Image (cartoon, rainbow, N blue to C red; front, side, top):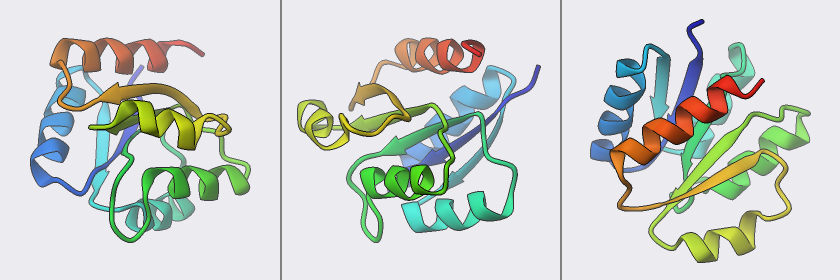
Length: 122
């Protein structure tokens, strides 16, 4: 079954790489450069099956985006990415949706494994 994944990262190269990885696994992907764009999209569309979000972004960071989504009673499995993964855990431990923290730079095989694991754990 085809699943949908929403990618949010302010770095175009990361977004394009993740889009390619996700599409190669047979899933639909939508990507945005900041949390505010992603939030507007999710309010108008069916929620995705998985979020892959950068932690540090301008306008709305990853934790703020997840807090907004959870406040609207949407609990979507989420992978948070950051170059400072230890610091991210401190800021996201109370967020129910965060299932994985992925350190940047990331291993492509690990990303595929994490995405597939979360998309098949219904």
